[in-house]
Length: 402
Picture 1 (cartoon, one colour):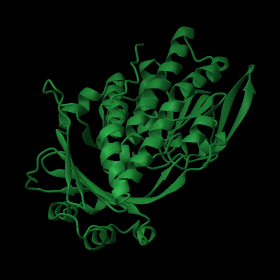
Picture 2 (cartoon, rainbow, N blue to C red; picture 1 turned 180 degrees about the vertical axis):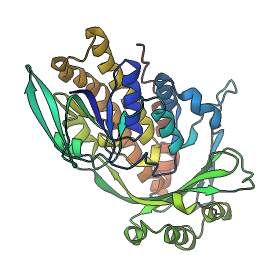
Picture 3 (tube, one colour; picture 1 turned 90 degrees about the vertical axis):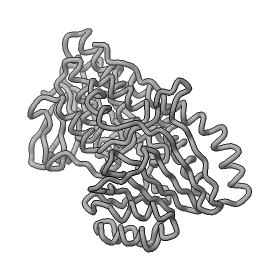
Picture 4 (cartoon, rainbow, N blue to C red; picture 1 turned 180 degrees about the horizontal axis):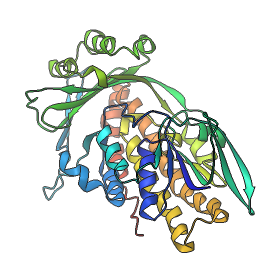
């Protein structure tokens, strides 16, 4: 009998295991891959993510490696207009996001866990529940025939989560857009300032941000690329299509970044999300089983909150389960339904807002330059909605005061 089993060793799964460890709970993490996965090469972490990493005790390991973004520039490809956004506080302190290597974040989290707490090549095939001493426990069936019993089961198994499906959550839907992401490498240095550049046009959104002096994280998203599904596993084709087709009219500096791509980091994927009302009214938990990260709230990347919100989930879930563990000196199965329910209610409305905000942000910014959309984007979105975005990214998920 395991106290806690976490399915998935991505950001949400590892961060949740670290949060529980700080309360004295050793979780078993099941990962279907042979090692830590780093699909996406890099991700941008806003202040809310760094608050969570500080609670998890690893922010000091990552922050010195990545400088905060000082300024952002948004170029309208149809009109040539450029808007700039400062990420420096009135007192001169940098408060902008930091883009980090996904693998570096995963390694920093995994390094905090006991040896052998992550079990790789472990594929979950079925879940059932069973009454045990008057309370519910989970019975987890693995592809190799192994059966694991757990007092708590947490699904952090991504957008196509087996655990979310078991809970009855509606499947994620296609947003109508797809995205390419990659890492550009300049062995002699790229010579660019640590600013984020974005380019917006009808049905397109592109950009890049330096990770360090020699590496730049870049992305390109557009509405339903016809060749997307065919080129998903062909990095050379992805690179050629972006340069020669989808982004051929973008500024030379962007095309040069794409040209320097490390082919092993290039990915193409459809942008999926879960309808926010399915989060608000859906079953995010049942007895001693719940979900976190993309398994709970897949969202489009337009607010860069997917990884950030997963880290928030981990801290909040770890705090609720940890408090119960410390108060009782052990995990009491009878209390887990109520404990997990508190986590769900704390997260439900915030993540629904993040999903809706991300989708709306992408739609407004890629909807073209007609006078109506221009008014909506420039007079309403950037003037008012952007202030809400800033508030969202400065959210404090709290501490782990165990």
